[in-house]
Length: 81
Image (cartoon, rainbow, N blue to C red; front, side, top):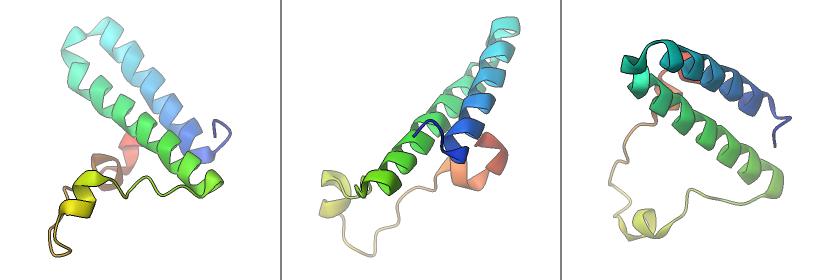
């Protein structure tokens, strides 16, 4: 999992955000976004390596198929990941 390229890149971006936060505490929102992206990268890596579909959960199983789910910030902003 950690060896996956997406996880590696997310870890680098998280570290950069953490360094920035230590210097400028007003960058907390970026640190939160990067931590979320890192968690999603690990989740995605785990899902693909272990063939686990984490996308299926109670919430999505209860929604009608026409319901749109919120866009993932990590997908919208490639630099976030």
